[in-house]
Image 1 (cartoon, one colour):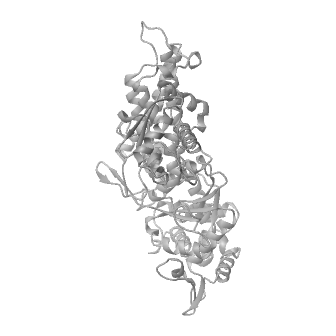
Image 2: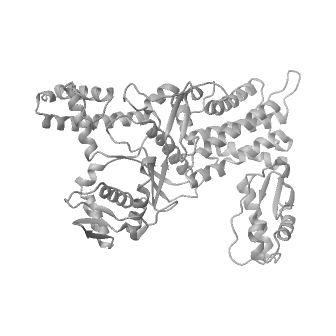
Image 3: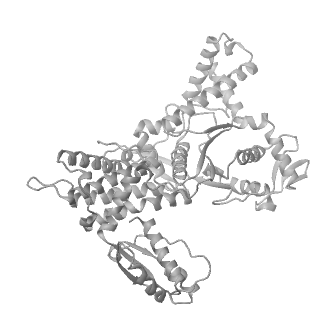
Length: 558
């Protein structure tokens, strides 16, 4: 019996009690949820539904719980029900009912834990969105890991997810980038506001080679203003391609790569401004055009068109949000770096000006991620051979591999600064969380192979009523996966999946030390061995499902 099945059974018993007059409750009954008690001595599952409904029924919670407990004891598979504290109901399942979970998991396979609760809901998830002026730095790598994992988790909960990358290829940073390429092509120092690092020289040399190969003039032979345009056009495309390749190797692919420049070229910015004008959300003052964002919760009004006639950067943000909504996004989730915290107020105000709702779970939602600090041998890692002064995503992958990099960047809440010990993350020890989880999966595979050698086969028998206390502990861990996946989607917190996997790995390693899947040398194969193989293989499936949500592989041997 899964927690969801138990919850539905409790809800059915509750409705029957209302229908026959045991309880008098007006209005709709709530969805019944069950959770694991803090202490397993209290039972397998607990619910606080009696405390939720007692006041509506005009009863004391414990009295309500006592009456409901009588009904719950009649549910098939429920071994005992006890009332505790102010009105908690602690439920213990029979071994057979609890053990059926293993069959459920293996029947559902890759779909175990999947939900359709968000079906028909489209989420546009934007993350990374680094300027096309250099390799992705370590902060961007954190968003690549977290954003891609969140996309997988949202899709697992039924949402239609559009993974989107926004290229800021319009404005001063592109001028500085192309000027840096021009300077390095001529062997000159880059401008003070330019970009350094070996990658600038590499791209400049590639631009020159491409131009010559295409039969075009060597950019170095052109006047600086013409040459800079060549470096701008070819250099941005080259950097764009490198970023896409790096993300792909990091298992973070996107459905849409959106160019800021297209907003200006298509007239989308002007159309968005006109839409806000129609909404009465704009005001002209000081020879400039302003969004009256204080009317929508911001701390001050924001300039849209400057007094010199130039459009402010915020104008493109407005057009981009409107474009996402017009493309069918019910919800636009932005994953931004710590330096964008000040953007939240103006962005939420802008969404409200369009008539939308902003904030957690609304049409617009903004997540802010904190910095990543790398440490090796107790010393901060600060330099990159290629980028010059920043650590890149490629540096991290080269140091520890994609699996360890992704897992380590995801397992901490993004609203906290992450200090990553490269020595630990690269190690093959149980102190390394990703190794610990992957090793649990590899061990389940080894147990399955060993079972085959000993002729222990699942199809020969499944008797969950034979399972014992050690098996029940592992089953309890397996049962939590659907709730963890759902919570991770609702709260936008992929790290919950990682922490759950570590707990499941710990439960499995403990179970492995106590329970045997294969007989000893002088023993016959029994139904208990076969049933435990079901449990072993169910654990393998849940580990695969969970690691898949994080974009991390599940090796069969380590």
